[in-house]
Length: 250
Image 1: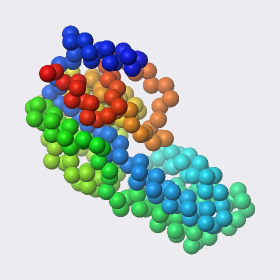
Image 2 (image 1 turned 135 degrees about the horizontal axis):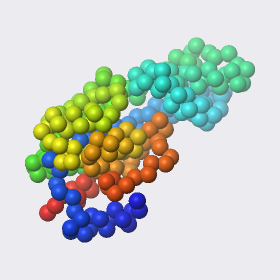
Image 3 (image 1 turned 180 degrees about the vertical axis):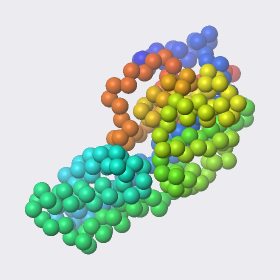
Image 4 (image 1 turned 180 degrees about the horizontal axis):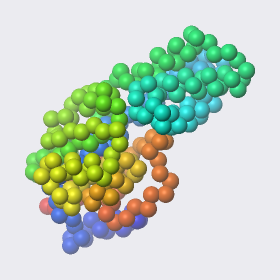
């Protein structure tokens, strides 16, 4: 599906979609961005590794790969990222035939855990966009996946909770969960849109659930990346969240 195709589809009056009854929003990296939180924590941990006389760049490559692999055993627990940072340090020490130092490991863990102590960065115009949609009479739901405590903290920290008629935190998004979220707000899948940044967690299950999907082309962490996604004309790609306003009928 080409960008030109998407743009012409929106421009032609008879091709316009009917306005949705319900819009289901993703949280992380759609309404608020976690990238700066992880980048800052990772940079701080990397600096500790470099100060210990090891290659910080090599450590980061290891950490990113380990963190993705650790989803299988630690899921989205707040333990995963600090554990991955420490395991990368230990692996790098083993490669360099060095003994890991407890003091260095403690500093790395402390740097890594800062990611869970900071408030999320709300996406530009997120609140204004949600308020606009509510004024149009559209019922809004927030469906975000991850650790219950972490996601609750991010939702509250964003200040956006009052915008939503329904808020759900799940370990994974599935077509059944998406359909039940829409049904709880009194709509059919054909009357609902899903808005998210992840092909894997937002776009694919929402398409399988029968929704129209608005894909925000934003940051996606390594675990969520899908090299071949084969999007079809049920998916509308936008560069910015606020552009959703332009999809509604005058």
